[in-house]
Amino acid sequence: MHGNWAQARPATRGVDAPQHKGPDNDALLAAAVTAQTTDWQDSPVTDPQTAILDDEDMSSDSANTLPPFEAEPAPAAAADRGSFAAHAHTPSFLRNDASTSIWRRPAVRIGLLIAFVVLLAVLAAQMLIRERDRVAAMQPSLRPALEALCVVSGCSISALRQIESVVIDSSSFSRVRGDDYRLGFSLRNTAAIDIAMPAIELALTDPRDQAVIRRVILPAEFGARSAALASASVWTGSLALNVQPGASSDRIAGYRLLAFYP
Image 1 (cartoon, helix red, strand yellow):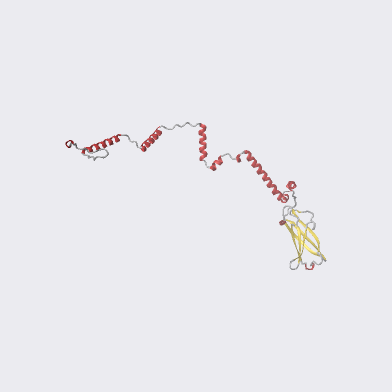
Image 2: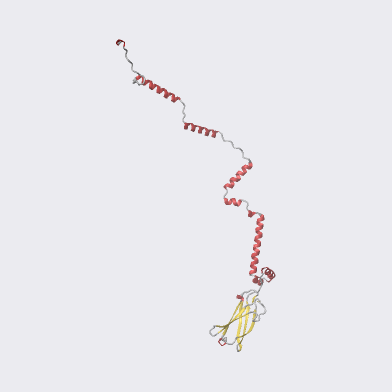
């Protein structure tokens, strides 16, 4: 039995036996890698970015090669487009001037003209009412029209008051007897038109030229028959005055006259 024993082999199941690589195995591995590399180099390049760029270049080239189709615009549409472009490039202040304004319409202009004439007439009427006395004195032919205008406005026409044209040409004041005095004076109108007759202020003064007695004499009191003093004329009048007793008549040494409009 001992002579039939065979040499036992190492078990290979479940245990990795050490492998010895020789020169032949390394050469085979290098040849396999080379073969695989050669196969990958023969395959086409599939870079995604490169593929996208190539597609865009192709699309741009095709776009440049084939011009886009544009329909021929209609004449009316082309005119509208041109007017719109001109309107868009025109400044706003020139655009407003070019546009049709409501103030340029004939009916509006006629209405404005009528309103202007009416306002001018109202202004002229107001000036006539204010200067009615002067206008009537300088233009007697307009007096009827002014009287009709005063009927509507409720005014009246009287002689023009222009005191700078009245000059006391001469005057006198003397005692008649006791406390009775007489005043005489002349009024000259230096204007070329009729003016209103003024009133007279009489001031009796003492030796120091201080007023002792003052009195206002209206035209009706000194005998004026008209309310107007004719142009370039002289009116002369006289008036008897009485100084009441106890009014310091013994102190009266002089007088002053003043023409004015009350």
